[in-house]
Length: 182
Ligand SMILES: Cc1cc2nc3c(=O)[nH]c(=O)nc-3n(C[C@H](O)[C@H](O)[C@H](O)COP(=O)(O)O)c2cc1C
Image (cartoon, rainbow, N blue to C red; front, side, top):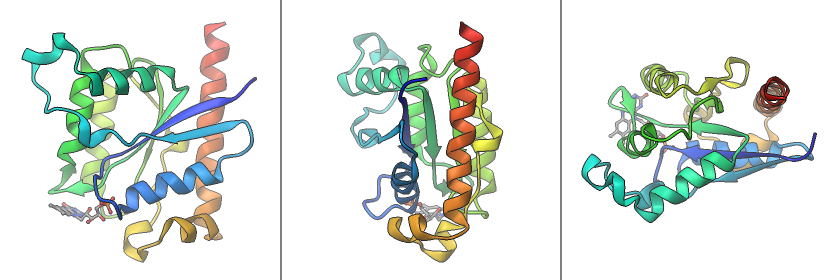
């Protein structure tokens, strides 16, 4: 089947972000044959403006190329004021006008059971962008409340099992979509 390459996008720009820690932990929990890269350019994207879309700013082209090259996406965004972060919405707005999300398998990770509004919002946006949300891979894990670090997530007896199962479900969805294209 070959290697699977997943791109992980955190909606937080904070160095000590729990959402980014969750995605880095997922990268460490990935089985052999699965590579997860954490996208670090969210803060470099200009504010979305249709007037500069045709000029294709370099950070936007870079994100689009990475998404298109990925077999699947892992997305985790904090909830700010009952929505996703402005940084995440900005990145998604840049990707609406291209085909990057179309039929792309996506796992929506949620680091806080309290963050129901952000999770519902990103589900709506990504669905509108014609991505394939993989429900079995879209899990909520209590990282924020327990303030778990990347190491603690990887070592956690229950959360690590949930996250490995999420990756397996995403991997199955990618295999299914590859088989359908054949
Ligand atoms: C401006 C702001 C608004 C927030 N609004 C909410 C909210 O509506 N609901 C919620 O559950 N948490 C809210 N929080 C808490 C964040 O989700 C929490 O700080 C989280 O750790 C941020 O994610 P990060 O650790 O990945 O940066 C808010 C935090 C900030 C800074």
